[in-house]
Length: 235
Image (cartoon, rainbow, N blue to C red; front, side, top):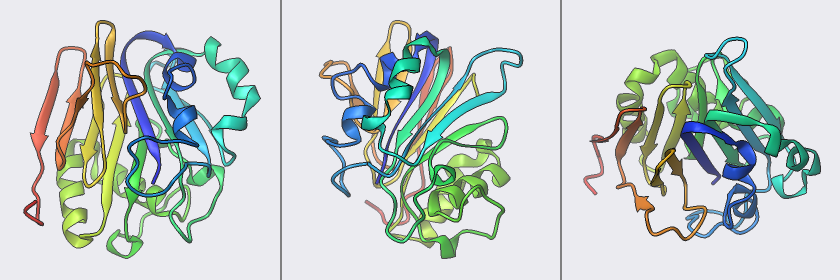
């Protein structure tokens, strides 16, 4: 259910992260290699980034309910978009959820960009105003209301309330990347110019590492930190 990617490091083009890699998000929209649930991600895509002007803390977004593989307008512009911090996603909608741009990650509270790779029962989430009625948008609104500094605790609590949930979250505010692994895949690539977090590797570089399940990852310009999350299922 969805694939996402985050970048923190030097200024690079959005195209170099999303479109140009051999197995990047464009390819993952129709042929993901490690996706556990669903065969493709054709229900929309989104890219968010921080461009530093006029306010470096303001996120920009471009979202669509159409498949990424057919968006020639984005393909023509993506090489000109540069950023040091990017969150991008392709979507496979949860059954019964709306297919609309507002249901497509990344979501935002005006400061953070957030993507959810997975599924969650909306009944376990508190009633919170959200961009869309879809499960991912409601989860994002819940996380924003609780605060990103409590991301690990929030995911552990929701995971305990919904044992079938898949709660891989990726968030960025321009200076930090945060990610959780909860019953879905995540990999990390530490490059000389920055760090990539992705649902699955976008190429065959041997430096990709799999992130263990039920962990919180924090990336800053100084370090990468892994923290184990409470696991109510004991696996």
